[in-house]
Image (tube, rainbow, N blue to C red):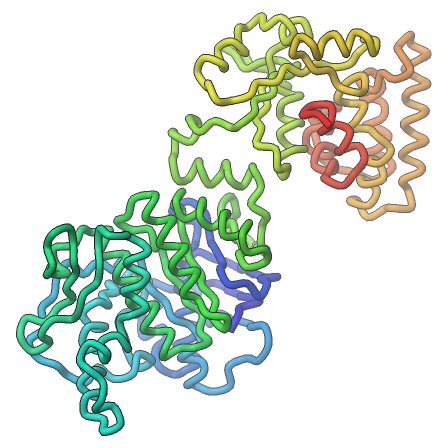
Length: 533
């Protein structure tokens, strides 16, 4: 089964949340800072399943699920691609959830009991409850082996072969995850201090309780996932913070194993702010086009109606993820390219247009494959001659980062531009940044964006009038910066734009820059001028 849409109203973190346009992918990754609502969405799925299967619901936990003091928690709705669950059994087997509180430090089993079907298991009611599963899965495996041993049709199987029926997938995944450092051996003696045993280093009988926190956490998820697949062949598997207790590298490898364990009929959802998980998710997305979807829960006001759709893991998305995962350390993660451009630099006294050009470039190229950051360093002379020693400082601090110096074309001749290239200095192909921002193609995109495509020619004509007016004041015919104030006022009038920036520079940053997108001629020209053909 694959989820296509979730609707949650007056429930925990959300006033009115819709998550939609989810494709039929294999992995869905929910990102965002603590408290943004990732776990609340899993709580919603848990309540949806319980209410419709008749097994578990609010159960008097309204204060936990309630949205505010007065409102009662509502039942979420979930839609799937293809057939919807039709009866209580199908609803119960549609979603399997693991909370982030999975720690089970030790267990020893001296007797066995019938643990029943996993669908009948009630380990938790809320996503803040303890979700210990290792000992239960141990009992389930041991009981299943005894049942197998008493089956007349299975008399030819050895004890080892019977164990392999239930732990081989977990054993293989652990071996891939830890290499020779850790190997699952067997389940010991279920009626006499029974537990899982591993080979670790030169110890052949290393008990589960002696594993590290990260090893236990990884083993728990892999064991539970591989077992539950046998019982829930088409379920949605949801894991809240699968990275708990693990190093960054182990987090990444674990997600890879969980992805490989996910069957064609299953879908895996993880809620994470782990840099290791995110790095691996993006890698899986590149290796498996269409199989990984990202939902960004950051920067939403859930006190209002919010619709979330999948996002492309752009550079801007990656920077937000780094900021959540690394906090202040995110600033130490350098891009592969830094473009030093014109514009008022940051300093002790900052005006409203500080780093104006850099902010526009950042907005235009945030979805680009170019791993680049932009920083303003003053006027053209300051950039060309490194007056602020910015380039030399960046080269010293960020040795592996390519630093590009970029200036406006202004009145430089082709010969000047070519000579600049020899000195490592690049110039725009047009007079300045405004020449791209007020391009006819961008004005047409603005007409589409405002819902008035029929007025695109009127906007283009207004640009020509603004240029003519600027020329009458003695400015160059290609000086869009001088004509921008008059033109912005006309664009506001033509398209009935309210807001969008208090002045022409702000209008450029907030309204026009987002319109320049990959695939547009003006975008390709600007990109080539900065990064090369």
